[in-house]
Image (cartoon, rainbow, N blue to C red; front, side, top):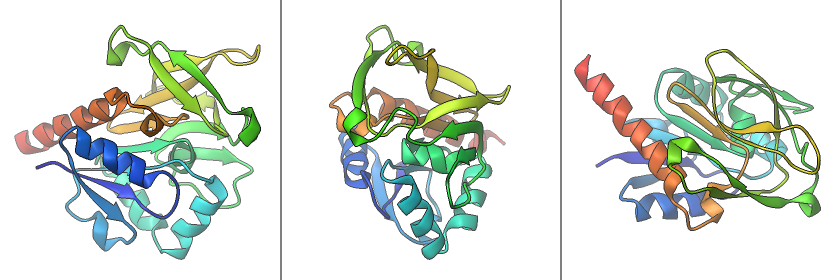
Length: 203
């Protein structure tokens, strides 16, 4: 059985766990370095990025999470989780995991009242658009050459910006797939996890 951890310090970890169980994955709530052991993958959920950064430090998880995400074990960050995974985040008073080669601008789409929804063209998920929920979402301002952009969005007259990205076994989305009934992003991540397991087994 594939076991996916969900960082359970704050935010939408229960919604992610529910979606994972729905598609047949075993889940584990993660609040300590010990609980990272033997996981096949990890989701860092959305929430409030400053609070998440503080809790990661308070729970002594900064270095364990850095090692985990940089070691090739599939890791997915959504919204605040994307900020945590980024190489750099503007105005974040806590260090990031510096795992995925992107720079982000926190809350660049506005405050809570400026949340919005959009139908995204995501070829990796098939022809049907993915209905995405953006809540105080970060904007990706820079991507490294090894980062694949899976989807972009144009909002409120601004230029189109990446909102779903992948770099190897790392996945980042600036929206909240766990808040919709569409499980395709979770299935996509699960396939990354399973593919990584097959690669490891073949070595």
